Image (cartoon, rainbow, N blue to C red; front, side):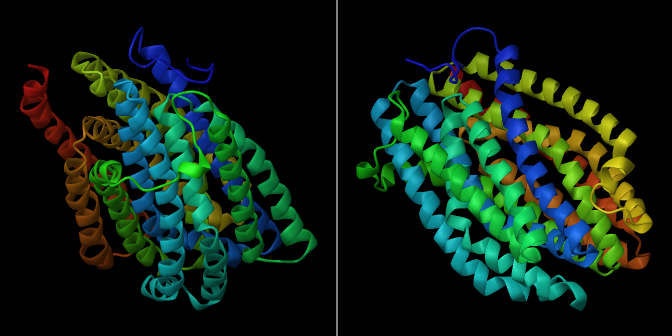
Length: 450
């Protein structure tokens, strides 16, 4: 029996259910980023733009370290969704418990490796001397919380698989409020710097992951957790990794390419770094909308493919893509209109505002291409074909951005010239992913539907 937060993805209309699934998911990402933006705002107002730049410069490194396991959580989403579509209660039970252990173990691995690699990566990125010490301090504290950070992501994937995107939003709201309060307490009252906002982030993630685990343990439905039954099931782990690892590698490719872009950006000075950091905390709102419809596509197709409803899967893709493009266009218009006012929340310096708007103009519009990449990639992952979109991203995103940073940008180094790489690389990747999907539907899926 489904509770009121769960959704029947196998029957009835799709357009309204996709929206009802995607909105709380987008709100979760946006709310999470608002709390991250509170970190930046507190640092920018009470510590200074160098501390602000230090926190922002860590985003590509954090992405590189955690995205593999976030991809694996997507694999868990697909596997659990398929078992739900098949009404395989035993498969769901084994997949859920395997997911919890992978999250905790993966978090420990990321913590250890991250502590060893952070300093070399910061040097490799050319982080300026006036920013370096604070960047390293932020990462040291942030990495200590990786087990609970990844646990929250895996638990959210479990809830998404059964059509519940509201419960993670509720838990994040509670922990996010705690995060904001702790930011002010640690930085303003105790006089801490970047270590204060990092510690607040770790504590808030501990709260949100504990709340989700509590709900899973109390659940009486098909998806629930019994802490005494936690064990790795290799028959479950294999398809989870087969789908999740390429998805994680795809995200890591984005992060690796962004590290290259960040290294070039760092060479342009602290004002550009601070403006870029502020803009990132605004543009990411648009990106979370993009991702929410991509996640909807993964989950709806995962359940319907498990139930053998191929034609319904095709309708899911069309609706997710159309709704995503419309939503992103509307948000882009708002950001273009009110961008300066949004940037001023983080830092009122004229140079920071100028560089922040340059970044927003190039990247927010490019999210239309991102919508195609995320939704179509999500469709392929829902069918179980995760390697294809990863390969498209390897060449379309990583290849083009590295080529641009090392061969095009040095010829006339400027911030606008650097930012041009985003629409160019995302446009090429969108075309490649679409071509891969068309080939997939004309070969493998035709065979599956006959």
